[in-house]
Length: 259
Image (cartoon, rainbow, N blue to C red; front, side):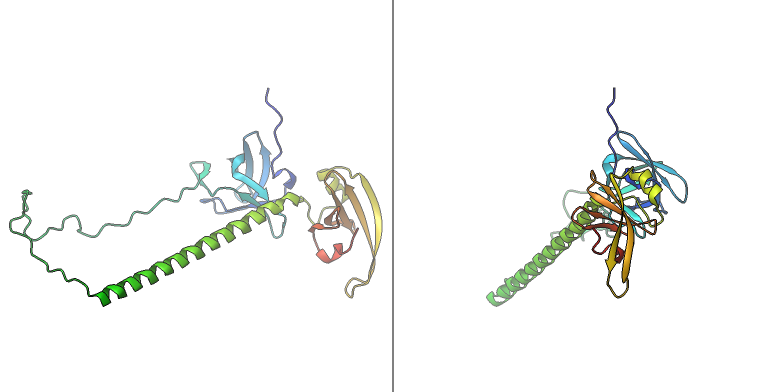
């Protein structure tokens, strides 16, 4: 008897579209919606072609926090679509072309019949020994070249680590991603998160130059998620954590100083 299917990072998205990062190669339109999941695979559907695609769960990373203009779902490997399925993309090493007619080049004096020895002795080439001054100059050029190559290699490593760190930070931010949009009302939020443990109306006095007056808002408290969903004018405005940290917002200035 198989155990329960573990939730995926896409479960909270519902019908909200998203894009993969990096995009799947050989697929032109990069916008999808989540359909279903099994113990080992996830099914998504392309919003333009309506084509359904299965991919292993192990390739799917996490969901980004920022949902505008579109939600981002990270992939832990670069994938490509071929033969009706997705596979890890392998960047192949390109072999350098050979010199034209290089294999047919013959040395002067070498017989065409393939005899073991040339028809005449090879030419004698004189070898000139460098002077101490020329040898010292050559060493200086060699050292300068080696130092330059080392500096370029160090810069490349630093750039690679910075890029990977930025991508990891983007994926880690998905730990607080919420499946809400500005058009969601109370019923839509309850349908996705369930009934709140506490539902209350609050008034907040604003004295800023652009939002002076009393702000009347609705606060839905979810203790198991350690966050409160805020509705203003009966529409989703954002969510704040237990420490008043803004987790997600539609207009950030409207959540300023809310409790």
